[in-house]
Image 1 (cartoon, rainbow, N blue to C red):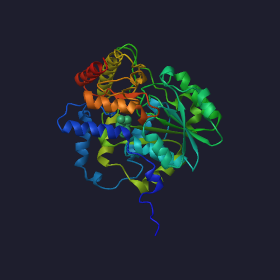
Image 2: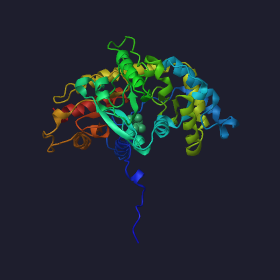
Image 3: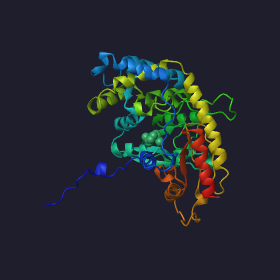
Image 4: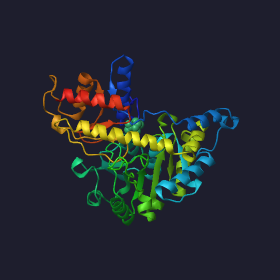
Length: 405
Ligand code: GLU
């Protein structure tokens, strides 16, 4: 009898999320009592603001939240998301153009499921967040990397996109501010890319989960807006899916509350899929998200300022290490230095030849966790999340200064 494969080829081809894996390893070592400082997961260290928690507590006492609700989301939340989309992305949509998802990840997954047929190509600015390739693959799509390194501020150009375009190109993935690089496209760059996509009939999946986390050069300056591609080029709205969520802006990663916004037919398709996959997101989290989006936004600004302060610290401290090049991020809460200058040299008896080996060495010898570039594209980079407290943030980089000094 021929032995059949135990796992489907589809699932055998995907890997565990590298960001979550490094984070879990760091947390396990911490649980063993090791003083690991982790820059691994993109997760704010702040508590969820109290008024949001209060709304969730009230929701647990309301029996209407104990039952199934519409798979695409509570009508009030879909309204609140539509209002937020107009406020921050400059796009007027009806509540029927919103699906509430179990975190931004489900929105990414569903966006590609709805748009891609076998062999359709997706242009992916590289470095990219570790989950996109797997979501594209699971939808039968073919990822086409468009690489932009530190020398170009991690920002792809229209010329590069055009060189990668083929007959099979269906979707452009657009992420600004970017995870993992923290790069933010300037309004004229967004417009140029949007016009190019419109001209060639290319769909856009725009991940805007970090849109409220941008930073000015001057700590008291007005932060730059991460202009949405549909605001820059309104004609693209009929072929764009926006992905977003409350996780990063409101320190709500564990609440699992994201959404997708798009043209009515696409959203209907995604809602149909979700009705078989997960049904409605927890009503408690949905009620909390209504409070987050419609309540006072001053805690958001406080957290943004704290991230900005930490950004300045980590850029300044990492820059003191010879062999590391640190482009200054303008958004999200990541810094993505080029560490190729540290490779091929001996540190504490080990000579790392890749950023993967360098990350292992840092964890072993300095008890510092960061995610290697291999999780996001080519080797030679490390991603540090600076969404951790000011004191450990500084101490961890000082450990690296000693290790690589
Ligand atoms: N998005 C965050 C990160 O990149 C959370 C972890 C994950 O879901 O990948 O670290």
